[in-house]
Image 1 (spheres, helix red, strand yellow):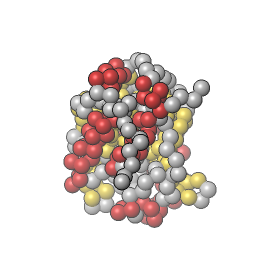
Image 2 (cartoon, helix red, strand yellow; image 1 turned 180 degrees about the vertical axis):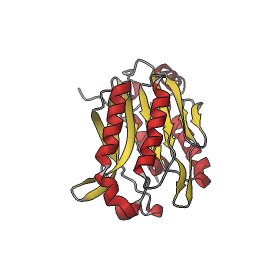
Image 3 (tube, helix red, strand yellow; image 1 turned 90 degrees about the vertical axis):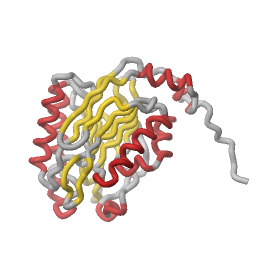
Image 4 (tube, helix red, strand yellow; image 1 turned 120 degrees about the horizontal axis):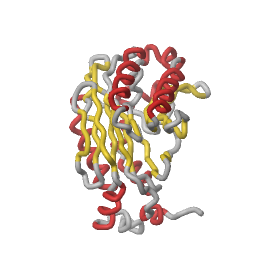
Length: 275
């Protein structure tokens, strides 16, 4: 049965709390071996806490190393393979992005691996950051999607897309209880990154996971400040600078409670017109 948006908003499909971890890797531009080593260290460190979900930064394995893009693409299966093995070993779902080639086009593609290491969903970045020439090298995706983790619906977006609140809202109207944003966000604008993550959580009354990378991206320092926010806007987990991780419990009852007390999503008006 197809449910209306209101039914999806009011549904209580997500029942059990989950433990979600953010892994803030250190960036070595174009050096896949060093970047994968950083990720592997953090996965090993957080594994003893038995996270249900692990989220890594945008194109964490390479950065936007346009001068070696063909080499990066040829090793994308290696990135997916490593994380697939780790997901299966520790029994965690994983979300990350990688540079891939499809039909002669390069895409910045987000992957969702389940706790058996199997690809359960993907999303191609739809809004490319033209200021950094992403549109010159990548082809944008043409659709939004949600991801399923048992009874939990998640909404994936990538970096720049946190600036488009209508995208986040649409995913929440489709039932997302967690919005997830892997990113490569520069240090000098990182205060905006943090403010936008918190705003997306408050306005959509959902959990938000934002995972940024840290390190030198060809002379531009990436800012870290990965975070997990509650539907009320409380900071649940943070990694400030450097390589590190944080883990938090996300309890759906906190989301349902705030949505009942302040029914913003139910009280939206779609009939208003400009005069």
